[in-house]
Length: 597
Image (cartoon, rainbow, N blue to C red; front, side, top):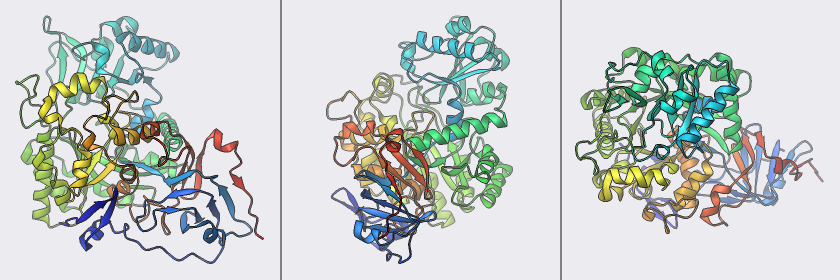
């Protein structure tokens, strides 16, 4: 077990012992000498923020083939220009390392781009209207799928009813996922296709919500009832539709500045990125991958089978390069606070009868963690409630003691609520805190459901980014797309403000948990690279690393934090190859021919 001894000074991490260098081997790299021979590409007239503590700022950088060979001043980098060197004139724009989304369900999100988009719907009427219009436009689709509805669209209960949907689309199955991926709405045709009736029992870890007067299913489906019953009736997407979705998803990811994606496994047992590894390999073989993927496998209770573990081992043997790598497993340990399914140490404040649920038996979970850790498989655990977070930390600590493994880098995903005693354990145990900043967006969902459920005392430890960071924990930021947008810039803004776009609440919700701009960028770049075991090759702009970078429309260091969400990406580069250029960039003549004198 490696203990971190790092101090924060002036908003930046300062290494104060060799133990921290072991944890972060590239954060103390010295600057490489400038190569003498000409290079393929120069980025000039830039404000380069490198996320390299030894050289945080530069004016230019040089690229040969797929990697950075020099970072420095204009005069220094100009010496590397040759007769065939291409030039990018950044015209004073901010250049950052490309962002990696540390928690994203990429295939699920990409497929959602082909379905009904309900994110902007405010009422049940708007949801039904969008579904009806989509069904009319796609008459041959056997199922109408969509996602993004908010609990607030359905009144005080927050739970939908199938009646209006049955009237709008009476004959074809309709299945709509909530924004957080923990509750669904099925119309009667979908329930019939899945064989759900009044007499159907609730599966373990899930629920078919029923009318209290009649006992009939209302169409609302919670947690594992979705995977155990409904999803199994949905025809899997065809190979061509999967390819279409992934290409669309990559274009959108590059457009908003993503160069990498860490997928912990699909949101359903039928799908997800791990099951689509062969499709990703096909895209890579065709030269179409424009994101670097690190893909995990979701495990299902009650215990991970030897066959599943062998699948992870086999995938790790097959996929372990700079484009596609595997070797991680993910547990769903609990649900979400909004539906009272996150596992809490004490009862929910608004319903003392409930304290959530653990999806895994605690001892079987610990045994599985122990075995995976023994095999060197990286472990992710979805843990939202304070009870689930504690169990995950306990399991990781026990595995480290028994296996004597070093640099295991286990992760906990989401961490919406936590006991005070458990905050410093992230740093002590070397556990990565994987957060999605937009999950803490202080909107109606937080105010009407999350806060009343946890109560005022526990609410003071909501999404404790800064507290974990101050205690030595490593932050890795992401989106959880398709739960929220994969666009990282609203997430960066919320990490700094913890306010809505309208500025509520004044001063921010729990302002002590805000992080600095430098630390937010690090969590999306070098922190994310560390979480994927790629910090030696990505995550910062320094010699020897891949030329994965983005050029931005505004300098984040010179604007108000409340303006960060409006940031647009002008150019995205992955491995020295430009994979996205904005219309604004294309019209401003940033590319120049070499002019060697």
